[in-house]
Image (cartoon, rainbow, N blue to C red; front, side):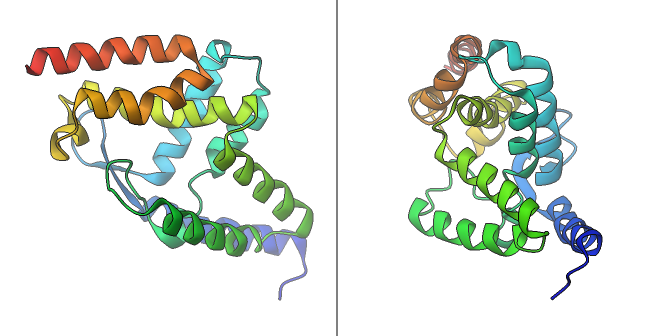
Length: 194
């Protein structure tokens, strides 16, 4: 086991480079290809940087950005599970917990604990920071679907009711203002399809 902190950090950074190869279901806005999980995480960090004033409660921007940069690192081991996949949430949670333990365990102990705790906080979505981070994790793909003529919604036969149920509560808990905008955009999208 590596005990040099810098080498542990570099090893972790090499390992998470694999996140660039995890392809998500969401397309890029130009629809030239599907986005990867590393791009998704970066984009969410930008959402937080620009939209944090719209959080339901004041948030610690640095903590939110950290959560968003690490929230999908577990996909290095388990891949991406789309919201509309119907996969077992219990099985997915167990696999992701094991991946988090392995991946963050590559880091020096103090950093491993910090990032693992932030990842767990994001997953639980019980703090204001985590609620806002989770909200953004739903906002971005919702807006991508609206901008790409239904995107993954069309591919998965997702209805307006499913969007309201799967995205609404999570976004509204973190940012009622963003949910008001997203709900209006989703309703307009489905009305245009009717």
